[in-house]
Amino acid sequence: MSVGENKYVALTTFTKDGRRKNCPVWIVDLGEGQVGFTTESTSWKAKRIMNTPAVELIASNSRGEPLEGHDMVQGTARIAHGDEYRSVEKEVKKKYGIQFMLIVGFGRLTRFLRRKENSSCGVVITIDAVSY
Image (tube, rainbow, N blue to C red; front, side, top):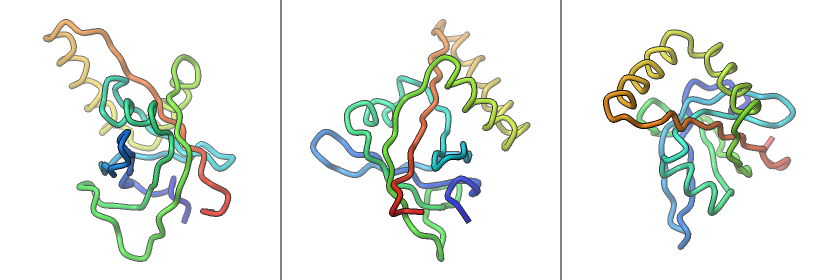
């Protein structure tokens, strides 16, 4: 099973000084050795990816605890905006359906109440060839 076929993965990003930071994310297979997810462009994971694009992924539960029998894969992440973001978002909507719509709706309500602009972005990860 490819990492993009899982419901959740534990994403490991790295701080400027090399410390590991883990969090669970929904993941979609984008084909051609790439996976992706959506997040707020102001999230810590997006900021860490902009500074250090190396990431690690492993199948996990919703709390980010790795599942037994799955291997960790490494990759290089980048932030996606515009059409590429919309393409990732479309795949996430297709895979997660009503769950995704509820999260997006809640996010829109929160931004409206706080009078903040939508700052969503996509994260596209190219899986290292040795990880396949």
